Length: 398
Image 1 (cartoon, rainbow, N blue to C red):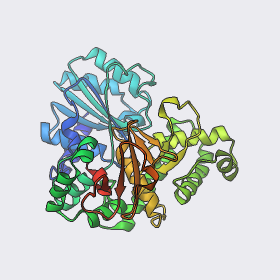
Image 2: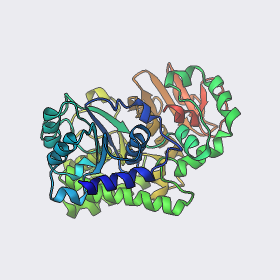
Image 3: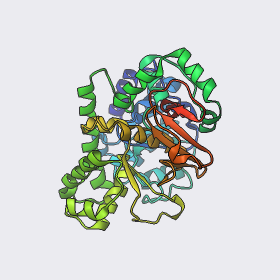
Image 4: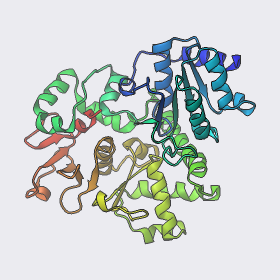
């Protein structure tokens, strides 16, 4: 166990507290069982290590941080670790990447039953099914989903510009005041254009080539490792899934023709729909429907977007600025809001009550002229004009 203590000290000492995402302060870390899920690369590991360093310091004792693909677990079980840690007076066990430990759910359930005073925080892929895990943890776990950086967080992380978040209602009703606040602090438009290229994943270091290479690595890991492990996809078909992603990147926003996709991939329609659903769960795609309430399992989506704008640049599709704008809006609004495909009346219907059109600065209200509670989010604007609001404002939601 001393090996785990040594790794804990090394890993926690390396992390800095210079910039901490506000997500840290929204998680109820004191609860007995907390899950932090999210796509690879969004910063789950960094957040957990920062919390440990800020709360418990570098030395293991009350807290212990473990990555569950450690060699330690080739000879020891998670249950053994918890027993020894509890006997030594440990209070909070942090388990990173639980999906790499096959029986994680059953053993965690047994641990919290045996040691009710021991708190466990664990992280895992967005694909892990807590509700359908081997042990029933659903009633006992407090689950959080971690997203990539918003535009506001990008400004804080990389530009040292600290702005408050605003609810969608505040953005729609108080856009003038918010824009004055933002434009006093910075010129948002050029920074927003940079965010669309390199701002979503919190590992940009100034080198765009390396950044996109890391995104490709994230995609490869999700497709080759996580989809095969969690979704039962035959490894022989991972090349076709990558081909599907490249096809969609070249064609989105894609008004879905499943027959055409099936023919292109040489797969049956149900398999293609299953792949699309899994890619959404893996946070590589967004599937939009015209009526979320009536969506049934394996139903054809009405429109498909890549999950976030940076994926377009990583996959070599940076020229699709109109699509990238729409992708940005879907990505940011999907965190905390329901987004439906608007069909003929606007691009998107949000929370069943607001209709949004997305476009450039010359975008008009022609398409939504008679639609109540409709707005335009337009690129290359610094201040609103009536219900025509700057596009970058959507990036202030979290």
